[in-house]
Image (tube, rainbow, N blue to C red; front, side, top):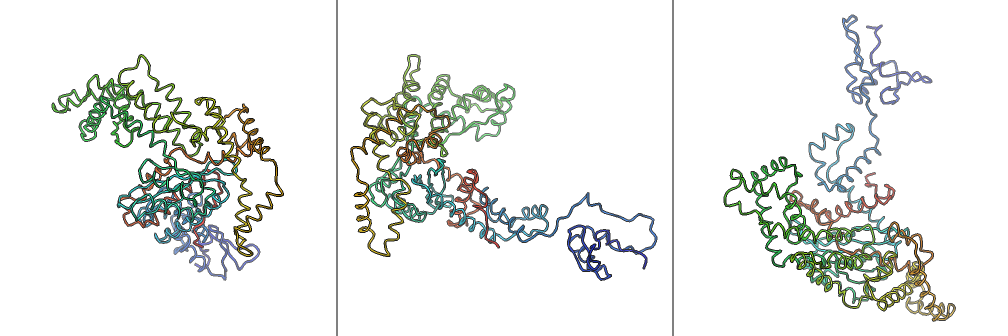
Amino acid sequence: MSGVKSRVWEHFEKVTDNPKKVLCKLCKQIFSYHSSTTNMNYHLKHAHPLYVDRATPSTSTSSSQPPLKLSQTTLVLKPPLSDKRKRDITDKIADFVALDMRPVNIVEGEGFKQMMKFIEPGYTVPKRDTVMHAIKNKYNTTKQVLLEKLKACTAVSFTTDTWTSNQMDGYMTVTAHFISQEWQLHSFVLETKVLEVSHTAANIAERLGEVMEEFGIPPEKRVAVVHDNAANMVLCAQQLSQNPSWGNVQGIRCAGHTLQLCINAAVKLDPICRVIAPARRLVGHFKTSAKATSALTLKQKQQNVAEHKLIQDVSTRWNSTYSMLERLLEQRCPVTAVLSEPGTTHRSDRDLDLTTAQWRIAEDIVSVLRPMITLTELLSQDVNASLSATLPMLVNMKRRHLLSRDDDSTTVKAVKKKITEEIDKRWELTGSLEGSIYIQAAVLDPRFKSLSFLDAEKRDDAYATVSDLAESLSPAEEATAQREDSSGAEESEPAPKRQREKQQDISMLMAFDEDQETEDHKKEMKTYLEDRTKVDKGPLIWWKLNEERYPKLARAAKRIHSIPSTSTPSERIFSKAGFIVSKTRSSLLPDNTDKLVFLSHNMRRLRSEGNPESQVKGSGLA
């Protein structure tokens, strides 16, 4: 045995410049060597157990089989995990929970642990408290990034709405929208917290004020609050607009909700409502009968019709009613075939099929509502300026699509007339528009600045209104300087007195002819209106390229274009929150709900906008 060399040397070698040191070929670690392989055997046993059986010394001088050797080409073992690697993996698990809205206790599941053991054998999955700690630190880091962005912008608009979770907790979501110095439109969630008091206008206004304070958004930056048409939200916006501490903030009703009210009024007309009701019953039959659904799938294959399922509408969403009728029309032949089969459909259910007149009315409804779907989708975008396009698109809709034609059926004429009346009433299109925020936005959009849908007198008034707005807005640098002066005033004398005296000195030194000032900003507006530069990629890109040419109007454009036309951004959060506040997570604390919703939306936005990942990284587990 003395002449037999231990097979442990298959995985170790002596260090060239130090014979008392050996190097592990598998993980490159160096160990002391004093004529004994004990250290090496111990290392193989604990760090590379798969090699132990093939590394122990032979117990026999003779063997009929050749020595076994596991080639490194068949299995490569990684070195032990460093602390940094472990922290990075934990950080990515926190990302996974936040971005995909997974329950934190997923890390305690046996399947998750087995998966991680297979992917990274040297990593021990942390407890849920550790992951939640990582998420909280990630929330703080992401919030700090958002605070910096809000601090750097010049104007912020908001959308807000209230909703109820599965646990019957009333939540209120607030989103912020602003345009950066690079003319990029940003949309972030500020808060999703339980509103424990009743959802009155006063309580909602108070909560909004608390959000403004928490995120350090001063009154001069607050532009508008977009909300639905609920009475409490309308009253809340009115209270904010009358509150001096909120500056000149405006309340704006969601264009999507307003359009919903316009179309709801139309679909309630007779005989339209007498078509939608039986259509719902027809779809409900297929939704509750497995036999009918299987028969429908078979008929779709036989008739070479798209194998789509029928859609059940929701009465509070007109676009779902449109989708239901559109899908029924697509599946009319297979549906009728299934209902007419005695072996599939009971005799009492055969009268569920629509009559020929009802199918024709359904076609009329779909043809009128189809462009409305496109309009709603365009207005609901939260990554492009949409407020400026609201009135121009509504006017075009009235003039080109809702205009009654001789070949229209009686149903089509009635629907068009009703929708037109509702649009005129709810957007006040027949009144004075020149002071409307929608008109101001259209003026500051080079695509619609001609205001061709207004008469000459109203156009001139609208241009004058926007010119006055542009002139009233101070440059961001001046506003910042004024805030800095006020913050340091406590060291000497009261801020109001010092500011008044300083402003008087500035006015004296900078005095000039007011008539000349008025002429200058009118000239800028005139040059802008005469500008025929093409708008290829939207108004924000255009203003980015022409900001230096029209500096005053650019400030107004950055303010007005921050306003979304719908409250959809807040409503989309409800859907995400539904995954987070689910039946399986009934014990989730409201504060953790806020953090998870915040991270799920904002981390994705920050990364899509090209921010360095390090801005939202770091679990603080060092």
